Length: 232
Image (cartoon, rainbow, N blue to C red; front, side, top):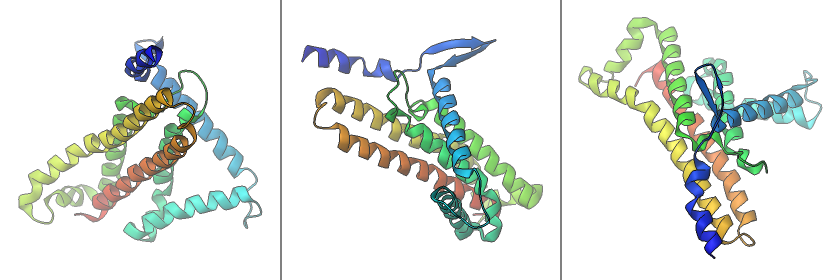
């Protein structure tokens, strides 16, 4: 029992990223290493799925790939019409990358943690997404149209819309971080306290949570993209 208590007291230490090496003035910690691992796995999976594609699907790999692409196209078309299809790569990449990071903890490698349990990762994703969304809105509507959408539906809403835009990266990042961090802490505690009874149900719940959080981030991105292009 004492060993479990000591292990519980060290959970937060295990969740804290550790420095690995430096590239000049840039510190590379375990969070960045885990992101690289997620990218490597995702690139490998995509390469394997997309090898030898045909004009008509002839295997399960191509069917799966087309279903994934069509699902994102459908999500975008619902909000932006057919012109929304050109943003499939943005939305699809976000979903797959976040999902891969969320599920990293299923790989039994010491020190391998979902990078989304680190606020620096989720904030980086959020700020990059919001900047990209605003650039797309600017390119689609021109400077005048882009600025005008902040004054919709009434000019008096301008300050509130500006504040809302500034807060989006914070809310987007905290939502993903909070859910993934909380899940990881809860799972770690359950594994320590009930190692023989909990693993399988908790792992299934972890998969579901990872998928849901990746989809929520992606869905919000589509919502913000729609607002940036079509206005409030």
